[in-house]
Image 1 (tube, one colour):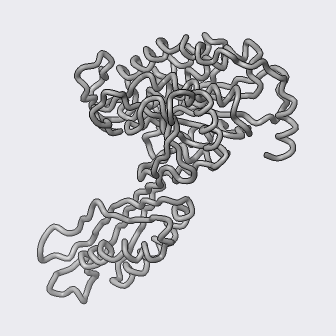
Image 2 (image 1 turned 180 degrees about the horizontal axis):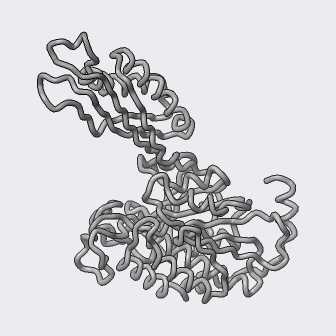
Image 3 (image 1 turned 90 degrees about the vertical axis):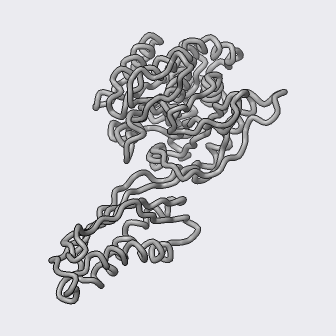
Length: 416
């Protein structure tokens, strides 16, 4: 934290301590569960979350806040600023993603099953949204009572499931301007409700899409020396490029190139004019993600030109890894233990890096922060329901845990 921010933060009006935080969270619990169920019944895909945005905006306005709808018409930003806050005081931000997935809801025995075919909240974004909304309601009450001593921004983000992610929409709209630290949670069906799982450093991975097109004049398989053997060329790239790519990258980065599609030709005695390869590049470390496109382009050029093939590489950026900052992880652990550990045993557990992508990573390009895995596994679950599956569900008691954790960070434990 630089000196101007420190000076600005020091001028915030002193606030009274909140002694009944758990009771306040509990007073909103039924409402937040019903909101989550409403969103679950009416899931909306990325950049189509108009109903979700309207419901959130109406509730925030009713709480005395002034939310701003993002330029695309979906998603919201809302600031809670205590009176007397000096200009330039860094904001503490909490982010929720509000979109659903394009899959069917396979649950049969719940009253909040999706009413829309081919759409479901199968990743827990409805829970994330309820957590951040609940945080806003608790903090709005604290603000009115003079108990909030730092400015806070709530981010309700559209289109997390779309690459490269709706986080970029938020950032383009100024959503990270003035933010000094940012937090988010993501449902984890492997972690019991009442706990969170944390990891310092990279907790998700980068995932980019790659398409290579090869072109040549075509010809007869009897005379491959007079043309460009595109089938041989594309086979060579498919076989050799992943190994060559891995040898050019630091093995500690965990970079892998895997093909999902290869296409060339339509007849056994015709050398085609066009061939294609498509696959994904996954990377565990930010440094490798940044270097991968340049290295891959150099290797494609070398191998394709060996066969005299014209080539194009379409390297489609997905998202970088989410890299949790050490101080932010410490603050999450401190707040979680302070609020929940007494008499309950461990409430924070370690977690592993996932190969999945998460666009929360884009926010961490602008401010330090961390993504925590929120336990949503109920005590009677025989096994975890996996994310992005039609039968995914969450123990709704996790909502109150997330709200109390975030409100505690804002009111008691976070440092910027």
